[in-house]
Structures are given as structure tokens and as C-alpha cells.
Length: 405
Image (cartoon, rainbow, N blue to C red; front, side, top):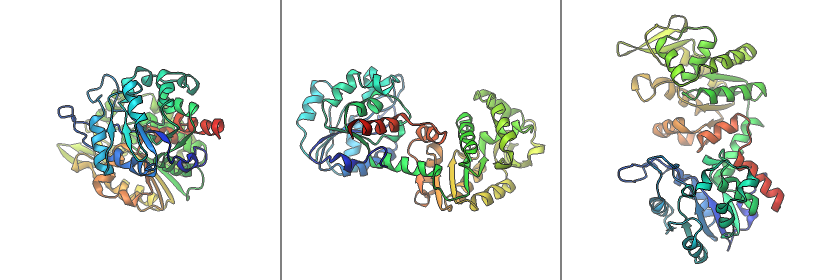
């Protein structure tokens, strides 16, 4: 992507490269062991691309106050194992120990600095101009020659190392950042039509915002809603989804989204598909009902089999599919069919994009990763991109190209 720059444009050979990664991973609080190394693996191509540079990794784990807010010694060991070569670690960010460790690096070596969120400034949300004046950014910038941001998972955060460093250093996106921006941008321009969005799960506000953006701007030919998102649209359309599901919407504080869903149905009803049949838990078993006859006391747990066939026919006729969020309580095998079958159908569409998070985890569990065109590594960043907002990290890299050429 020329707008965010490429690694090759930086001519990084022989230079000290500050490389921002997102290695934030699930950790066992008792043993401090990293439970999932997927994010590490996603960044390996970028690190290997910089093998003729001196690489200084800036990354984070969790945030202050969380149980998994930890040092990065284990992350350096995990990365070294996956990379197949040593990765140094220093328990310092920009103090003397860090500066000396960076200064002693030789070409081809990799060093990981301490969790950048151990510094209070990194936990602030700042505009790029303010971020470039922070101690953490000024001190780090003085330690490197160029900056590469490969941390798409934090691209929606306007934090100092994300948006401040590009203001002081010649910068570019890493290979993962480049791939994310390229594929997500293609959804908006040049994607094979018809374009279908499948929006589910429990993050209703995000899904309604995405639906509004892609419908209002003619990006999507149709939007299919599933999961709790579908329940909100069903409520907006005047259907009684039963007490348990209605209560869940209230518990999740999404009652206000019903009015927004109704406004979208009023404007784009012919382009929004919601299930006309659902599966509920009744007496501990799966039972299916039309949306006109959902029992008052049974929670909606999945899409019904007949409705699933209709949804999958719409998916099969699409040139592009963007899917985010499950169709129901997929963790329970009794109610996993909707999620699994929709993902299986989506994997066969010519251009297929997945919004990360739980959906990506299910695809990995199903062994279908290779069948999708693009599976995003950043749930929050991906959703913000799809709502039409400019991601702070992307904007900062674009601005850096204007400043430094």
C-alpha cells in the first residue's frame, strides 16, 4: 500500500529499525505461559524481511490493572523459538539499559524492549502532534533510524508509540499492516459483487455502525444479521424474541440500538436479511420456531435450519463476503450448526474477509484458515475500519510519508 509506505521504501538494510508489534496474547496467570502464539506467527514475515537490519521490538501485553499485565521476557523467548534465532530482551523501555542494549546491536540481531505500557504515557490517548512530544516517543525515536508499524491490532488506538513515532521518524507499515489495509480497503473499492456482510455475535453497537456505513455508502448489496445482532433487528421489526433474549439485550446495554436498527430497516429493509426461524433451548434440548412463535421463556441460541439454508443461499450467490461474529452459542455443540455452516459457506466465496476475534478462532478450530482470502488479526481495528473511520495508526503512517517523503 503506497499510502502507508512499504518496508523497501525505507531501505532498512544496516539501519536500526524500531518495529511496533502487537504481541498481546492470552496468558495463564498462574504460570505466565503464553497460551496462543497466533499473533507472534502473524508478525514473523515482517521480522524476517528485516533480517539485514538491527531490529528493536516495541510491543505490549495487556494494560494496567489487568491480571495478565506482565513483563515481556516470556514473549522474547516465544518469539525466539518461532523465529529460529535469538531474540534479546531488556527490562527497560528507554532508560540507560535499553539505550546501551540498542547501541550494541549488530546487523541481523533482534532485541525486545520492555512492555511499552509500563510507561504511563503510552496508556494515554493523544493526537499525533501531542504524542510526538512525550518522553517515551522522543527517547525511543533517538534510538532508531526508521520506524515500522506492523501492529494492526492496535491501529485503532491513538497511543504515543502508534501515532507519535511516525511524526518524528521516516516510517512505513509492516507486511501484516500492509496486508490488512490492502484487503480491507478492497472491500470498499473493487470487491467482486454482490457484496454481502454477515454481522453477528454480541457487539451490537459495532455491527449496527458497520451496517449503517456499508448500506448508506452502497458498499454492501445486502447485510445478513445473525446472533444477538439479529435479535436486536427482530425486536426492531416488531417480533417478540422472548424474555431471556430481550433481557440479554438490556444486560448488554444495547436497548438503544433497537431504534437504530429500526431506522436502518425503514431505509434499507430490502437489503437487510434477518432469520425467519430460530433455535431455542427448551427443556435442555434444541427446538426450532418461526420468529412469529418464539416461546416467551426460551432463550434464542442459534439460527434455525430453514433460515440457515436461506442465508447460505444468499452467501453462495455473493462475489464478496465479510463475516464478523457467530450465529449463536457455538461453544455448545447443540447450537453450533449455524455458526459452523455459515463459515463453511463463506469460505467458498471468491473474496472472503473475516473480522477476527471469536470468528477467526472458530475458523482455526474448523481448519478452514487457508480457504479464506483474509482473516483480520485485529477485531477492534477491523471493525473500526469497516465503519468507515480512519484508523489513527494508518493516518499517522500516511502523514509520516508527507513529512519525510
